[in-house]
Length: 316
Image 1 (spheres, rainbow, N blue to C red):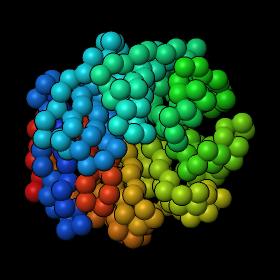
Image 2 (cartoon, rainbow, N blue to C red):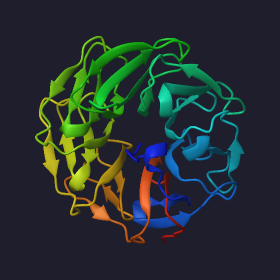
Image 3 (tube, rainbow, N blue to C red):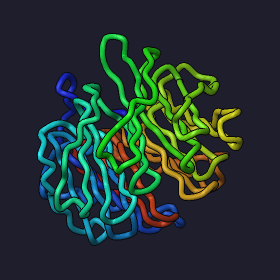
Image 4 (spheres, rainbow, N blue to C red):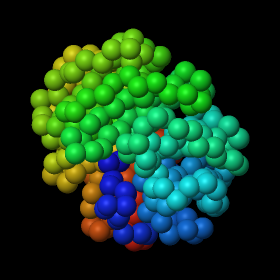
């Protein structure tokens, strides 16, 4: 999930880039998929296996593929609101979030999407589920840029406010299991819970730059990315966060890891970074300078997809 402003107050240009890596182990194999059913900006993408995936974006756009992205079909979201993030736990159960505090839910792979009120009117930026019932959403807006965390134990039918604070927006959330999770956002904030969100405490990130995404592969190993090319890593569940050299100063939008070693980061100006050693070293892919790389999803070390916008591009 990226931190792209796709609200009405700051619409981005349209145009779509959706790419798949078919051989990341060899460091090549990016192909432009640019789904043809629509031309709206895409902000996030989620795959559950090498074939089944969804992408969301502005004006309520939801796309689905059942063949690894060779073909994409438009699904009816029932909204014109901009969607910022999407997650699926299997081929049937998924959720999308965006403007005005509404969460859209499907239990049939997106054949139908149903809106569910969270009781919030703030923009929702990040979402994660650990199973079909338990999930968390983060967001924030307003003159004080309040951040909030919402929780559901019934698949999104009802939501409970777990955290509400005026220190800044929260932009992404990740859970390693039912109890331990992290949320990141503006001013370098990192929040951590060990009781499923009953209580949230701040961890020291060592930066005041906004953090746009966070990913954990287990209860110890995690990464956070953000503005100015910031990449942070922890190997102790966030007790300590260490800066990693990204070799870029471009804002970084999303991070995805499939294990403690193999990960990818996307960002502005076509930034795509890859590591095979947990982030000790990061390697950049060549890319067109005018493309904005947003959501990223990998199902194994070879198969991944990126959603974004600002024109067409292909990599090989």
